[in-house]
Length: 254
Image: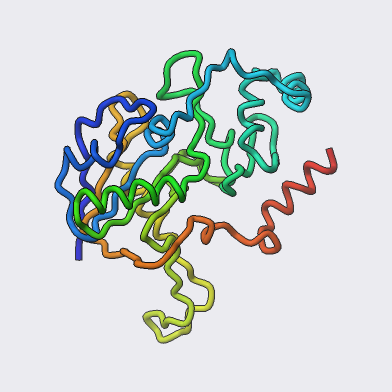
C-alpha cells in the first residue's frame, strides 16, 4: 500500500478574483479520487479577504485588550471581527472563529501578504472547498475531494502542523468504534482524524516560507465520499470539551 504527495509547481501569486480551479488544472492532470489540498492563504486571496491595517478602526474591546497586552489595537480588532469567543488574550489570542474553528488569532495573518495588509481566512471554508471542488470536477471530469488547510500549533507540543479547516467530498473522521484490534478487543473510542492527517502530510511539501507550495495532490488514498460532509464533524461537542470549559473558568476568574 502506498500514496503519493505531489506538489503543484509554478502556482502564481494569487489575487482577488483569480480562478483557482483553472490555475490548478492548467498545471497538473488530475485523476479520479485525487485529494486536492489547498492552503487557505490562496483561497482567501482569491476571495478578496485582504484588508489594510490602517483602515481598521478598533472598538472598545480591542482598545481594552491592547492596553493590557501592548499589542496593536487594529490587529486585535481584526481578530475580534472573526471571533465568536475569546479564551486567551495574551501572549496570543486564542479564539473560536465565526466558522467554529478554534485557533490562534482567528487565522488572521500578517505573513505571505504585502506590508501593511492583513489576510483573513476564508469566511466559510467548507463553502470555499465545495465551490473549488465542484469546478475542479467540472473542468477535469474526475471525482475529486478537496481540503482547505491552515497551519495550527498544538496545545502541548512545540511547532505547527497542517490541519483541515474546510472540506469537500471527504469524511474528516474515520470511526473505528466497533472494530477489533490485533488481539480481538473491541475498539470503543478510536476516531481517526483523516482530513487533518492528510493536511499534515501535504504540509511537508507546502512549507511555510517564501518558497512555499500552496497546492498539493494526494494520490492513492481513496477517501472519496459522495455525500455531504463538513469540517464541523471534527469539532468536539461543547458539553464534552473539557479544555474549553477549563479556559472559560480561568477567564471568568480574572
